[in-house]
Image (cartoon, rainbow, N blue to C red; front, side, top):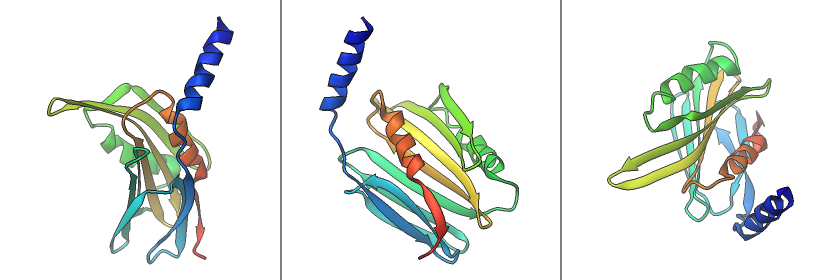
Length: 171
């Protein structure tokens, strides 16, 4: 029985379209550092900068991946405190399936995985989501990645994008 389940999962994975990813590096204006990450190569992007705040967003319609990050001044602790401050507000969203929330903290960053599940204007909108939080050079960084439409296994794709995050001095 377990062999048949494994074979079925293997066959399912082989028919899932593979999206080619590319490494992107975005310099955070006025901060002297950059964030690098792997996202689908077809993703279009836009940025918004206002004083010490900075936002970046990229979306790839083919894969359904939406990637964004926000940088804000921070002097109230480390990654866990950064996550707590921002996730506390985000978690109020009534469309987040509270039974799917998984929080994990490492020295490198804090991670929150969850499913957004809503009916909007008669349409079902369900997506897998992840937020990754870290503090770097006096800023709290909130990285959000989502995948729509929802499919089993999407969580691993988002975790891989989170694992690809690298930050450091601008080149």
